[in-house]
Amino acid sequence: MKFFLLTDNIDTLMGMRLVGIEGVIIHDRKKVLQEIEKVLHDDSIGILLITTKLVDLCPEVISELKLKRSRPLIVEIPDRHGGKKIGVSIDEYVSDAIGVKL
Image 1 (cartoon, helix red, strand yellow):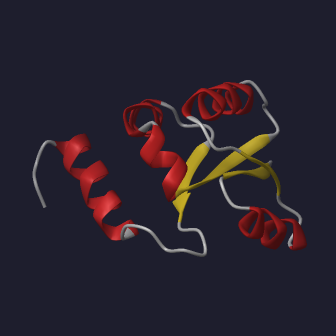
Image 2 (tube, rainbow, N blue to C red):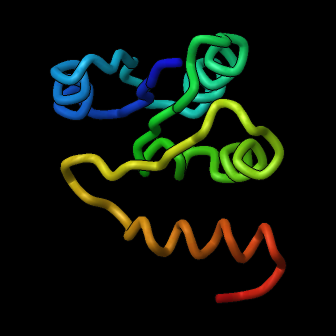
């Protein structure tokens, strides 16, 4: 199984390519959803890395996939600009999953 990256930043993609992770650069919601659909149908991809900015374009879809699907594992990563704190996102996902605010 391999990794795949969805990012909005060329620097993030180039850094990941240095360690052998391929991906695509996307800037709009429609393309994010199209690429996610491709990844869901590719059995060779086990982990989908997606930058925070792209998660913010379709949070309900990403959250639903994380909760309902076992493959691929979807991991939100910050890009070089940071963005919102990943810990806040994780707290939101856990709260949604178990119904208890942390």
